[in-house]
View 1 (cartoon, helix red, strand yellow):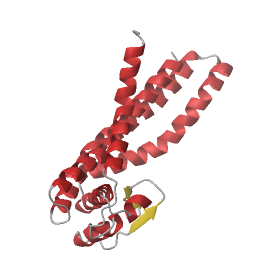
View 2 (cartoon, helix red, strand yellow):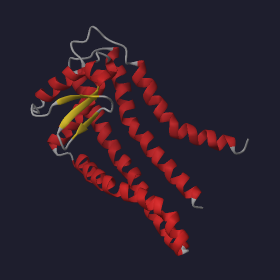
View 3 (tube, one colour):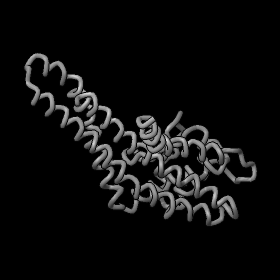
View 4 (cartoon, helix red, strand yellow):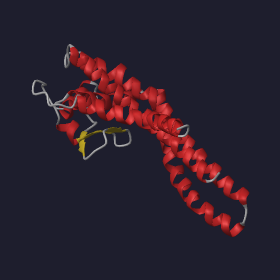
Length: 225
């Protein structure tokens, strides 16, 4: 019982945000025929209003995001074609990132640089993790193995830092940019509060990702203890 309670607490902390995000998105994902357009159409309208006519809105199988390299706003099929509070809120949120990019937001730029570093080093870290037991076996050098492990954990820690830097960027896209755009004539009354819940959930996806990275670090440290 003493072991079970902390385990349940860890599972709740790590997986709770993920469940909250999925529940919130599904709760407000019902079709709204009264909406004037789909998520994709709203994204196009907001981009044009922001002077970002060169940024396309693309339909993807899954994974809503703004790609600053392309640049392009990419929406999953349900959100691109959907007429739900979730669809329009997610669309406005991703357009918010495009506006951050246009405005040269410092935290947005910092996140871009950290992500580039993370992508380059993550692959190396996984190779290091795979080679660590082999090198330890042939060299019989525990310090070498622990040095490799420390490097890998450091890279995982960088992933956590990226997620933490991402949080203010996400909240800015949700509350400073997307919500005012939705409340300025597109949504009214209780729908504004529902959109706020969806936008909060969109931001909390990165809380869940940061917690998962911390869990991975703990698991790896436990294996090599």
